[in-house]
Image 1 (cartoon, protein in one colour):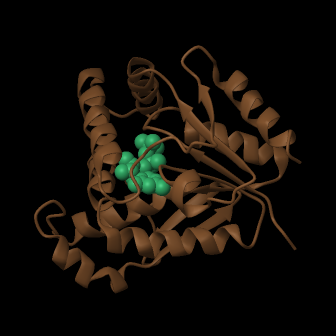
Image 2: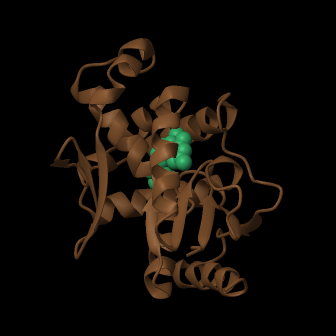
Length: 223
Ligand code: CDP
């Protein structure tokens, strides 16, 4: 059977995860959050005292020890690192920055991309990330580049964290986001960029429901 793949890329805080998740739920697709995989790899490095920026070799040599499993339960997507549920921990800010740092390493990407492609071969998926349209699923039937102004992306992330009851500072979030945007767009391997054949969706002026509707409409057009 041929499954449908929807690929969504975009910068941090554009709403990719929440919008993709809701659209997938409503259409009966499996949502695959590739960022969670980079986050889990970063957490492995952090917990093992590996200095990601200055000691890539150690992480590359220990990559075989990194076992990432994504499961779908009634609590939604759960991410396991070597058998431990790390779904909440990987959302913290040190892991966000770490994810962007491990994501520049080719060997890390190769390992995670293989897992992502395998998942897309076994279900109808909405997969989001930075290089899904351009590299992971170049033959996806629907390709979307989801973005929003830097200001509204930082504001949304701030509200998301506050809602979870986390201490946060808008200025710091904005700086971290700028760091990641730059890192992700300028890296040599699979940088964040809009694929030529991806539809640009700017959510700066759209609320959550409108963004979900827009994505569903684009998907329904090809079903
Ligand atoms: O949710 P948010 O947009 O903040 O980030 P994420 O999607 O969880 O991704 C975290 C980091 O992983 C990004 O800043 C990228 O550096 C990296 N990433 C990537 O390089 N390629 C992907 N397909 C997904 C994430």
